[in-house]
Image (cartoon, rainbow, N blue to C red; front, side, top):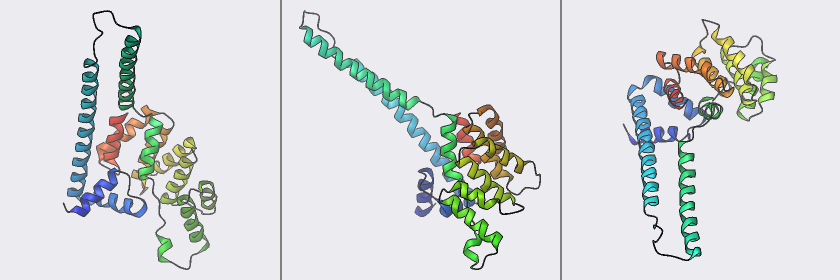
Length: 247
């Protein structure tokens, strides 16, 4: 594994890959077994390091508490007792707060939003190939551009001018609904794609459907979908497993 691929993996795990770079990397993961295995190894190491760091912090707080100077047996001034108690209480509160933060689990909706931002990248490739677009192509190109610039309602309005919508365009439609937090409509859009057995975007639709259900806090409905993604080793299988581990 050369340094450039290792840097790509690091950028991917840190969420630094965007747009076409992210899309290219994830496409490579589908065919480059060595790269996929290296990514999985990095994930395991990252998880292990976090676990070790957590255990170390817990031990350090226990040691800190044990090292607190005990109350003297002889009579001491009240002010000294107050200072000693205040110091111990502060240490305990900081430790409890830190450990509470470390142990806290993000909500399903928070997880859905985080994973959505990592994977929901849509690019209209035809824009780069043609300088003369038909009205339909122009509307489609503008719809993708509006989504990229976070004009989600405008993107939806532009998609309404296109009939019929392809499966890829339906994905974009669902993505706009998700971004507008219209999660129920997003669910309906992705489910409609999955109802077509010949859909070529069913893997993407399944992943986005699971995230939309999590955004609605419908965890029990999302889990079987995520498990299906893992079992079939389809698109986003590794992320689906991560999500299942976090739920």
